Length: 531
Image (tube, rainbow, N blue to C red; front, side, top):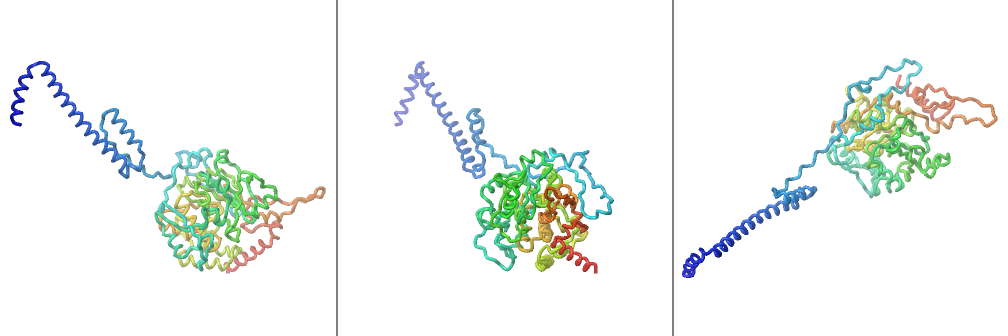
C-alpha cells in the first residue's frame, strides 16, 4: 500500500502540467467543494425548519392558537431567505369591561337636580318627578359594547336534580328544596359557584321543569340577544297595557314578552284580544303550562326574578308588573338608571317605608299573606343579623324596594343576586320586599357590589299605574241604547295617591269587600301603633 501511494505522486506530477488534465482536476476539486457547502447549508436550514415546526405544532401553547401566523412565517422564510424561526404568538388581550362614562360638559343632564315638590296640600301621597333622559339616539349609541365587571364571581352554574325529596326547611319542588346548609353556602361568594335557581328538573328551563313553555316560544326566547322587556299576568288578574313612546329602533330590536297562564289565555281569547299570531300590539304572548305554585303572585316571581334563565342570551332586561304601562323608551331607561350609574341592578325604593320590620307589619295589616308566615320570616332574618334601617346604613338609602320595576344587566353578580332573592321567595313568603335587604346585605358583605336604588317618584315618571282587572270590573257598565245616560266618573289612569293615601271616595272602590276589609285592618293597626 505504501508503494502504491508513493508511486501515485510521480504520476500526478507527470500529467498535471498538461493543460487538459490540469483543468479537469481543477473542475473536480471545485465541484466537490460546492457540493460540500450546499450540503452543510441545507442541513442547517432543515434543522432550524424542523425545530420551528416542532415548536409551532407540538408545543401546547402554540398548538391551541391560530396557525395562520406559523404559515405566514414559513412562506416569508422560503421567499425572502430570511430567518425561519417562528416568533411566539402574542398573548390574548385582557378581558375588557364596561367602566361607565361621564356626560360631556354642558349636557343638560349633567348636574340635573330635582325641583322642589309642588306645594299642593291636597295631594300628600306619591307622585312622579322629572327625570332627565338623553334623546333616544344618544341612549342607543351609549349602550355598552362590553359587560360590566362582576366582583367576586365570574362563573355561575345552576343545580339540576331529578330525585327530589321534600324537607322540613321549606321551599318547593320547582326550587329543589335546598337545605339550610346549601342556602348558607350560596351566600359564600366565590369565583365559580353552583347553586339552586329554580328549574331544577328537566333538560332546560321551561322544558319539563314546571313553568313549561312551548318549544317554539323557547326558541324565540333564546334568540333574544339584546334588550328585553318582560311582564306577566296569571289568574287573569290584570289587563294588557301597551307601551307608549317607543322608538322605531326599539320596536325592531327590543324583545317584548308577556307571560300568561292558561286561564289568562282563555280570557284574552274570549275578549278577542288574542288571535293566532300570539301577539297583542308589541307584546309577544307566551303561554305557560304546569305552573309550579298555587299562588298566582308567587308564580309571577319566576319570570320577574329569573329572566336570565328564561332568556340565556339577553344582555339587559326591564321587568314591569302588568298593572303598569310603560311610557318611556327602554333604551332611555337603561341609560339613565344602569349605564350612566355604571350599575348592573337598579330598582326604586319604596315611596314611604324604608325599614323591613315596618314593611312586614304593613303587609300583615293589609292581609297580604299569612301573618304567622311573615312573623317567622322576620324572626329568622333577625337571627341572621338584620337590623332596622337607620342613617348608620348610609350610603344605603333604603331596605325596602318598590319591586314592580327592575332594570338589570345579565352578568354573573346580578344573576347571583336574582337567584338568591328568588330562593328566599321560594322558601319563605312571596312578599319579595321583605327578603330584598337580607340578600343584598349578605352579598355586599362579600363584595363591593350594590344595588342602585333610585327614587320612587323617578319610577313613576316612566311607568303609569292602573287598577287591577277586578277593580275595573266594578265600575258601572255603559247604559243600554236609548236609556238616559248617567255620567259616571271614569276610573283614574294613574292617581296612585288616591290608592295609597286612602282618600278614595268613589263608591265602587268602597263597596269592594276586600278593599274594605284591608282598610278596616289598616286603621286598627294604625290605632295600635299610635297607642
